[in-house]
Image (cartoon, rainbow, N blue to C red; front, side, top):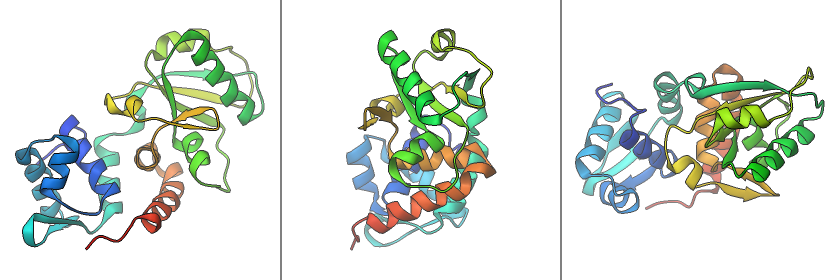
Length: 213
């Protein structure tokens, strides 16, 4: 790849393409404010890799989204964003997520659930995962505030590598959650444990997308 997909502008374009698999350069430019030059660089790189192709009127078609997600996972492994891991005393995942939320609210720390904790807000999934992944604006401070224990549940505190991650959160049943495409990307970037879940959520997103002429 001639473009690093984890660079800020490229990441925004990649995320847009995952959410809009058939689109146009001008549409990306209008919606994101990313320069046409950057969009061209990213799209050309994806076309060279056989992941996307160009059509008439600068139409862009994402042909292999899973190859794109796989490539992104190499450029942006989630472990690189990890700043702290906290083991809790709580034994129920729902209670642990509530404790995390309440601690953040009380301390005024912006947060957003992702990976499996984000997935459960968008899709019923048959595998439970004993780790809560959350972005936090001040992960080191949050680490000090969370009650420690020896229970089976851990919280992995991630630093948001892009400002828009904490700007585009959704409120779902009292929790802050990253948007669905971000959940898909983070699950893939989590590694093999998250890929089946990411695929199921992304297929649902694709099935709900309106057809584009």
